[in-house]
Image 1 (spheres, rainbow, N blue to C red):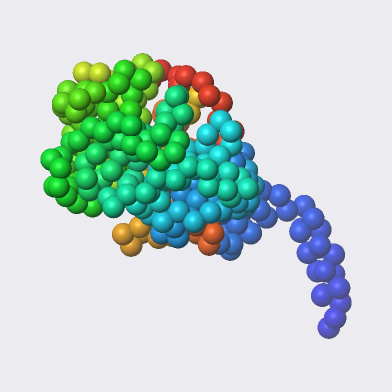
Image 2: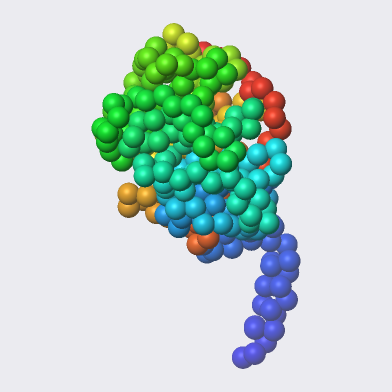
Length: 317
């Protein structure tokens, strides 16, 4: 009665020993929670809009540093290692020792900030429609108004904004679903339609513009247009296998030509897709981050291992 079991036991052990490692790993992954990060990993800084924090995350996908940042949508890592980010109604620069070395506060909502080469900080005030240059002491040294004084543009008037090298301004008007380029005096020079509501914008060295869009009356997508307004590349919806884009917020064009996409998972989409995806020009995902326990809704991220080099040019398609 017991002999068949004694015979089967060594057979079972032999089968387990010879079982392919890939099969064993995939079985374990299928039973586990959503993967934290795929290999090879990236260290990065990110903003979690819902939790109201900014984080530094190791290449293994572990949180190493955090700091309060209410309603943060924009952040950058400065050459000195400090983090610059918006805080709902303000902008802060914070050291790794968590010392605040720059602080600007406003009555207006703020979703855009940028450190300038001269040490001043560019700030985009959403409700007020003001584009400001602020000195290190927090004083306003320059103001360009896109709205008349006293007019409230509302919560959706502006998201990301940038002061360009030529002195022009690039502004994502989320509610109006358009990106506008203004001259130094605030005159509109160009308009780029952005269905879905533009969230983040990048002007590339070749003059092209990369724009991410949310879910405001249009599919979430990121697209690149040339100076004539022709769309030469885009990713949207479920085009990248295994990744469903819900609301594309922050973006970073990498030196290798890939694009880092922040897949904001608010508006009822929490846990339904990765937070971050690195996408190749031919729309393949080569890295992702999806820790839905440590993070809620990542609105922006910057890869810390990214070299400061000019992006590879795109080919029209």
